[in-house]
Length: 149
Image 1 (cartoon, rainbow, N blue to C red):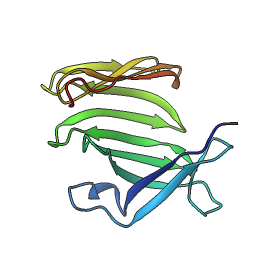
Image 2 (image 1 turned 120 degrees about the horizontal axis):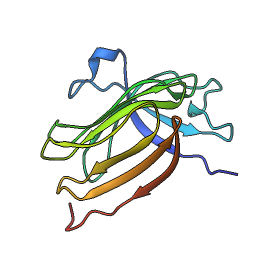
Image 3 (image 1 turned 180 degrees about the vertical axis):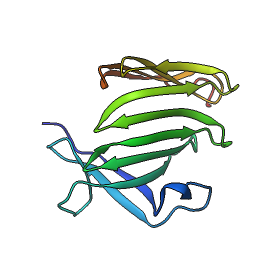
């Protein structure tokens, strides 16, 4: 059985509120045995917009969930506010996505739910590689930061 995970996230009240400093109260989410995401201690799969800051890198992640699965816009920003990744999910499946390197050039692109998305550390080294097939992630490899970045 898969272990559940918990993420501390700032909940945003509306889609257009994702600007700095607009995060609402902290909520805890967990993925349960049924594969869906729930707000901790709630019995209904989670629906809402979420914002998370990655410890260490201070990257900002914005996701949307509907009935416990990713649905809608997904975005990641480097700590300086520059876009790092954008994607669209539909009922938990990746439809399309694009990543950018720290210098602003395109890092990778996925169309029609199939391909590889590569994300980068602030120093330009590869940080994560996720392979998708028909909208489902089939593998993910994380790469440690080189030189402490």
